[in-house]
Length: 456
Image (cartoon, rainbow, N blue to C red):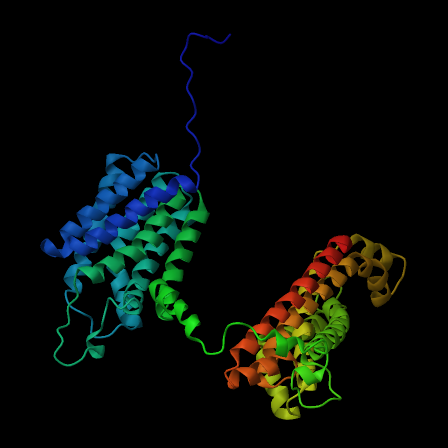
């Protein structure tokens, strides 16, 4: 019998990813702020103290109870690592190479070991605890290259004569950013058993890292975006030239060079249709040979799979450059380029679809004495045929877009017109053509989506 007078204990709500966002920010902020002001204190003690306080506050915000032993050990490990970092690297490094980054990562071994111990004590699996240690060390190894990319760390070998090599607060702050997002994120994710947290943290840091490598800057992007108003002959779009007084479907309005050749827009569609039909037709037998379910033997599977991976390695633009160089500019080179492009995409998609087909009809067909390929045709092909048609429509959409780009390197189609008009700075004509392409692609995409919904 339940005692109604007894107090009811409400179970604590489960930890979710969104509840760990603030703890992750706090722990990262502790490492970043501590790195920024930590050099004011003796040998990185302030940095370690602020970083440890941020991590303990993050645990409290995440409702993760840690014992005094666990908190003290984690704080001691972090302080030891910050002290080692500041003592071992008081000035700018001579160079940031593999040896330097590995050595710097070893300075954070005490913090990595303490974090792994805390994760293990909080119920994480041994593999997860090991991953926490690896995340701390990996973040420390990334810190110096990331600092160079962010423009914070400048090795002595890259400095101009007369400049003083200083390794100060900003340098340690970027170290704190890397370790906070990746290391602290891994620790919180292991304790809360939410691996998506560390995955998101790693993606965020690597995005910032990659953005700094390519010189991406949001303020500069906003500033430079206004330069579009300075493009000559940009507005309004010259639809009179593009549409051509009712005769725009043929060459006189688009200056393609010969009255016997189709309008470039028509040629673009022809290239896409021909490449799609040929590429999808050839990909059908290749896809069955590239599937472990329907390949007749292992050698044929390996050869076919290798061939598909080979043609997938070469992008469509490079195929176009090869064929334009060997065959000359024109629609034929573009058709061959998109043929291989379609073959690569379709073979990849369809072979994976064949892999997921039900193997029981194939086994039943073979049990009746049927040979391999007739059994595949009667048992597997009907299963993947709707997906095959849907993928073919999808490839046709892609080829319409790709054929526009291929024309920029002389592979025929509407892209050749865009490149020619751009060379004469007739951006009003370019804009009109782009708008026509957008309308065409939008219509084809809507028709294709409607057909795919009926098939799959």
